[in-house]
Length: 69
Image (cartoon, rainbow, N blue to C red):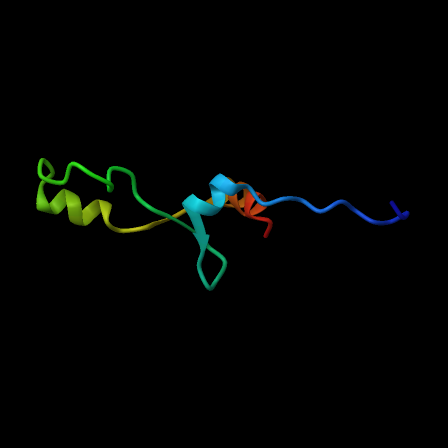
């Protein structure tokens, strides 16, 4: 390896599947409890968990590092 070259970091495969970045660089994630067993959940609860969330602070910084951003 030549002097001055830094090895590349690989992106985390699990993180790629669970998080995405918005156009402004915020980290977006899906809500939990939104995959199956919808018959036993109320309509209000289903609407509430369908909304994606935005990570804040140190969590967002850590996820961005895993995404290679």
